Length: 108
Image: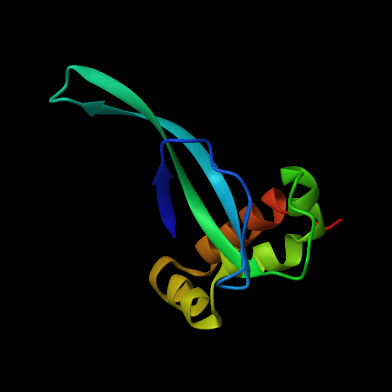
């Protein structure tokens, strides 16, 4: 789910949902405010929600390394979504997408 915020996103624990919110693909963007007179910095990112299993969330890279399998699973999508990509964009496009995810979230 693509999300924006004015503050730099951090990993957060949601006790209400029983999930950890992991910001991925963080990009700093400038937006015009006050009809173009000023710009403000925002952060755009994908918000991945994985089950909370009492993981440590203080270190972004450590969390990413220790939870690569769950994060990969979310990035791949369901088998129906993957099949749709194969049908619409072809097998090679699907394979390239999977390889990019594996590169970004390598096994430990």
